[in-house]
Length: 107
Image (cartoon, rainbow, N blue to C red; front, side, top):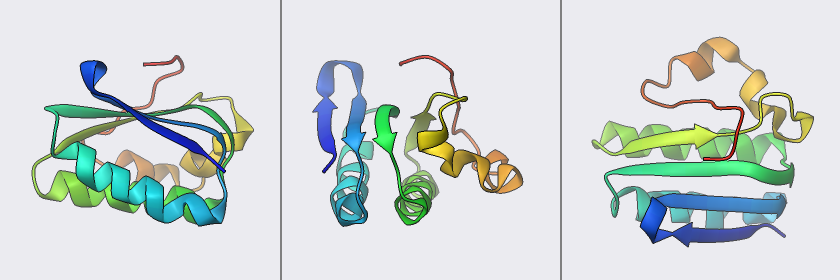
């Protein structure tokens, strides 16, 4: 089960540990809620140890939905971490996410 926490001072939603398919709804709901509470939400996945593809897809969709209503979201992952490999599934689709960013260090 993933640990999901919001750090209001830094505008960061931190997801850590092993993400299970059952964590999908909680992560998506947190994105929906907190994207509207800060100027720019940093979605920090740098501490995730495993991430099912279907959860990664839902995260991308939730971020796209937040941006479609004017919220800014930056997705932070470790580029070389195979646990968060969903960002490498479709590089062209990932690149089309607009203001999303990838960084190789914690936010």
